[in-house]
Length: 441
Image (tube, rainbow, N blue to C red; front, side, top):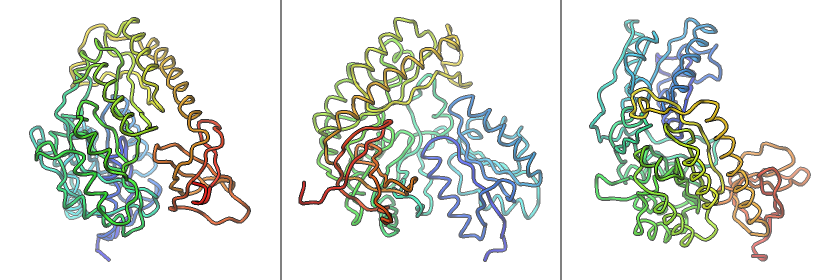
């Protein structure tokens, strides 16, 4: 056991990349004798992996720090991630003990040891504006989870007018294929059957080295024991015909594509500095649906961007209805200091933003219901997960449909097993089905 036998509590805000990184930090600290605890009150150290996508994220962080100071005034607070990287002076003003940026998280361990040696604030936020170095972390997976997340890409060079991410995450950087293979082998050895590839701009994987996301997919697929590969959020314009063709050849790839749309209005997309038009987006969706029969297309949609008129919003609604997403995340534009859009004229009224978000949600909920209804009668392989109800086995199909199967009395858990399920009906955006034998396929 290390001399640093302290209790540490972890808080992770934001995206799946942050969750992945926090899991790795947890593993790193456990190996040094730090004990993870579930509550802030019991912690000697509280490590916060921050998000700064919106101003609301920053407010949430400040509230969290204030709460920790109130319930556990003696705790050492360590900040890392996007907020201190993008706004180091503001982070320093929060009065926490330890601060790192978004690409030197592995320095947290020596920094905490330094703090214990000479208790005084420790801060290290190196510039990453032009960095294309990928910060590798020790391979680990959460044995409590059925699927394992695998970060293969970091950073973004796109500079959309509303987005702080290039400042918070630096330039695009990709993970070495050998490292991807090694961590996949570790995940397989610990019983995981599905890998989820994640990144800040995942579709740009390998662009610095002449590789593509298809190379990463093939590398993971080659590992024995891995039966499914799922992709995180994708920038649509990066999916060329060649990449789609290669992805379609990989039978382990789940037919579920989260293509970030943001707006279905070309004028708004141009103001956002997005790099595609609605026509190009429509064409990419059509190609995916051609190559991946019955695939699920999900997305993010922003409403209330500066100078979005009623006509612009109506155009966006029509496009969203046309595409027919199986699920969508709807959110109102939030002004983000440090971005071009922050100073744009004709900011949309907050009340109108909420009204537009409600209207867009109504459209996408109907699309989701139509998609789910179209699945009734299909037979799909389901990877079963930890059971949240004593009455059902539950899991996800390759299309990421949540599926429940009624559990028989005293029946054992099916966790981490794959069975074929016939979908019988839809209840509350969930598919209900029955397990069938291979003979019935």
